[in-house]
Length: 339
Length: 290
Image (cartoon, rainbow over all chains, first blue to last red; front, side, top):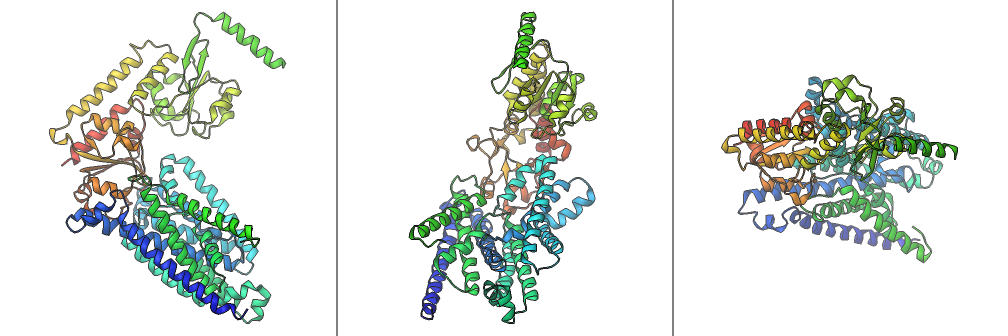
């Protein structure tokens, strides 16, 4: 066992290096792929319009995809550690359905009354999504009466998800003209990400990565069981609450800017674990990088495959992440070890 | 078994007795529906079909509509039977309609038919479809084409042409981007909105090859640099500033028309109010074209 540690450390470093390299390559690719392809990059210095396309549209949305993926990957790793459940994903506490409800409400109420319109212009779709996500998590916490019982928290999250989802469906049915726009929100899109959105996501990523890193020993302790974790002298209640806050904030920030992107949060930690078995501190960081690379790759494909039209990026993350995960699973089960 | 025999028997009798004046309509699914006489009690589950029925001056035959039908005002106090996608089957059956008009995409057709209710599925998607739908409805009401569908179509057609001719010369060839929904989903040249724009003499930046309502890369719009932008729904589009769009001529010079709720209903429905839609778009062009 003791001889495994340096080896594991090296593997983690290698993976991190590989992912960073992939990020850099994808960033360059992301800048050159769009409705007009390389042409815009070539003409950048001569043509102000091409410059703007590259600088104000492609660069922020590529960076935005990277940051949103990183946030979701981080949230996924935290959720799986916190709930000790490999099926946990960032949307577990109801933030996805909360965000959808927020957006649906905003779109449906917009233009109906002057007062509503006045407020909605101020908060916008992003604000509505973020508020919805955070309120849904708060509702889950309220229903579960705090963060102490993992199972109760999970169940409350499922209930909140189902109920808010149902209300969203009802609003959609009553105002069919927002259906298409909602669809694009639910399948995720990086088309709305500008520099401000990037700055917000970067700040949230920095804060939540730092917080998660500092509390990662709690997740390591929890992996041994709650009783053991308590006997190690960890202050579980406070730490758990803080981790839920990190989870909610990271997910809320990503969802508000890019919509509901499927599967990144679930797949990223698994993909990391399939390469290297490591402590939660490293897992969180690696999973964050993995999510970023996954979403950025998916976003580039979404823009490129049928340009100048776009595919919903959520569809591609599901196909890419799901396909790779399935392949890993079968490769491993072929060797008899399982994922 | 008995029930089937009885049904068959009744059908034979009715077919025999009305052999001479049986009224047959083939709908957009390719199904031929036979009526003993022109249907008197009609339910419409699509706003554009409701408008078409009323445009034929047959509003009084409507006994129920879907929840999205809101024009003309007289249909607003009719019983509401759910939406086209989630109709209230029980309510429809209870009203004993002679025929239910709905979209081909509705799942209700089979269910209603199995309950013995006649269904005519019609789906207007472009200008030609609107004319065809008017003809079918005219056939259903036994209104001669010269007084019904053809006359109505001629009115619509001339009004669209009049709207086009009323435009000043500067509008000709103006490049327009019509956003139907946040996404951005655009109305392409092949959509009915696109067809109206073409008739108004302006240039749609979304070519027909991309399909009627494609979801675009926002970059594409910046590249195409439209002179005028029209926004045709109320899903907070005007608020959704896409990054990098500030350089588009239309955005820079505030050449954007956002249609209100009532106007949007007119513009996005492929029905008899197409002429009004053309006038709304012409007004926008007159005000905003450079």
